[in-house]
Length: 505
Ligand code: ATP
Image 1 (cartoon, helix red, strand yellow):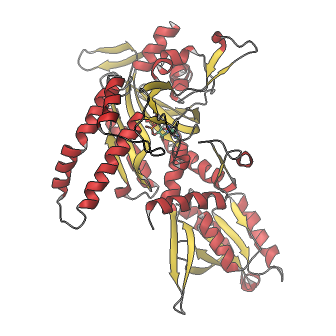
Image 2 (image 1 turned 60 degrees about the vertical axis):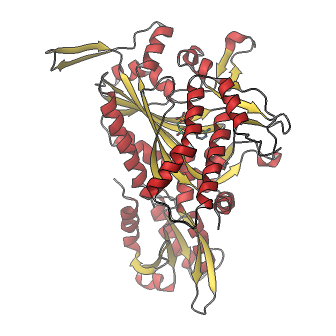
Image 3 (image 1 turned 120 degrees about the vertical axis):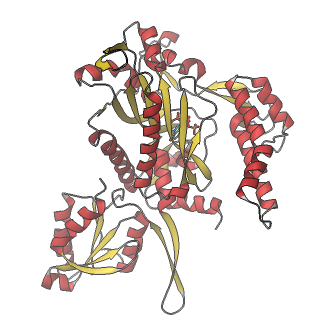
């Protein structure tokens, strides 16, 4: 099956089993906005909880925060978002479609690269040779593009589009407008009078809520540098190229942690967080070859080092998390615009001077992961359409989500074999006992085989079947999702089995 079909099947699966629905679907949806259904909301919450536990609960120098979505408008002036949170865009005059110029160029280079790879598929070419070909044939275009982007050279970007003869995927023509900047922030009006002074923005990142509260948290929490503040919450971006399902949304959730450090020590912490965050993704069972680092060549206005963690989605390697050394840019900007000190007094002794480090504006290392992208990563990694050979020589098939049990929407399904003979009552008693601890699915409709398949599709690790023997000896059949093998255990052992499966720290 090709990757496009595989991706479409993941999207259909997400809808069919109540993970993700298009927003306001009865009105034909709203582009790049999605709702999470009954199974999706659980998986998403489990991902968020796992992140929160590993960030806040497992670090005694990281605390949480929940700042409001609306912030004083000057926040976004200070952070640079009003002036420079924009993408260079271009419109095709024939199709009337708008594109991000960097995406058009990157897609063009990727397509060219695929043609080269396909053209040589029957020839043995070493990895070194391929690297050499890439450096000669693809990298120079990307370098030119990055240079134009970093210098805001729109004429250069226009020239690149022309030189490369890039065409609109819809109209097939190169009839482009001039490249222009397009701000990605949504704005609205606060109060009843709509004049300019009331314009406020929906936050495009959660980080600024952390920066403006830096001293509140530091003082009231008596935090000593180095320390971190973690936050999860909605962010909004008026993305132009909204595609690839929940990969790029206009309303999405971020999970960010800003780590405040002594100036000069930021690269040490940056490297540490880079490794820690990669290890975190692997702890969720993502295979090593599906994850990679991608260093930024074009740094954002606030960063002195930046790297993405990329995952191999069905549509290629793409960013799921950014790790940025944000210097003291944000705190200094807020000092400047608010005229309030954003300094920390460090009374640890500097061994070089023999005196305390004293007052300074801390440097910041940020880890920022999109919860919805992580959700898509998790689904893409877990989803499998299996062909199962049967004893009579024919085949059967199933769709299964191999989710790590800690993330599964339901930890177990309790299924009475039949809807009679007291089996539902016995099964309900078991379900009610477990419900206090875990999200449990109870189901008595359909054949047991069909119910197993439904649980596979939801990623439920254990199906507990209650049969006539249960009434006699208090044992049940456990059917395991991935191996489809079955064991007989006592009712008393069920909780310990689930406890063990969801243990991760
Ligand atoms: P991209 O280059 O894909 O637009 P970005 O570099 O602008 O992403 P950051 O500003 O670093 O993203 O945001 C941190 C994280 O937030 C990203 O790694 C991603 O997981 C998530 N994120 C950013 N924009 C979106 C979006 N439109 N939809 C869903 N998640 C997003």
